[in-house]
Image 1 (cartoon, rainbow, N blue to C red):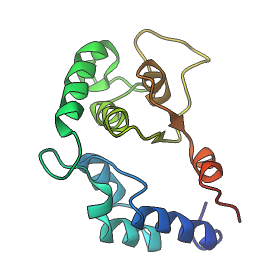
Image 2: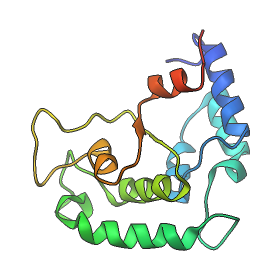
Image 3: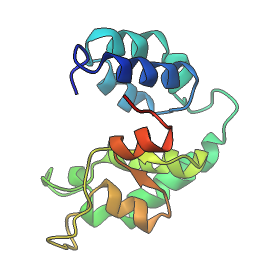
Image 4: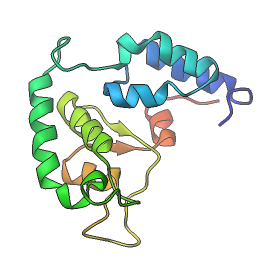
Length: 151
């Protein structure tokens, strides 16, 4: 949804960012730094509202590390980096954001769809792991509805 067409929408999303509604790992934050425009500027200016650093801040980063370490072992057979960078499955960054969502008890927002059409023991996506971990997964439109954002 282009920022120049849906300006009001992105203004509301920026308010959520500044209000510390979202959080992410440093790796995901670094990926988001490539976003351009006013949204990108808002992300860059509000990293302190978004990023959860290990050993920093008032959050249970030890629980996060425990989840990450457990999940790396439990889901090793589907993690891309452990399996020749297999396409169509989760990577280590995905595991880290699922562990973060589980730790801080927030939904995970992504545009990925569950792997329901071709169930596989070697390929799982973010929504699949979220379901296994009892983490609520939402796409962007579900987030907008949940936050009451309308145009």
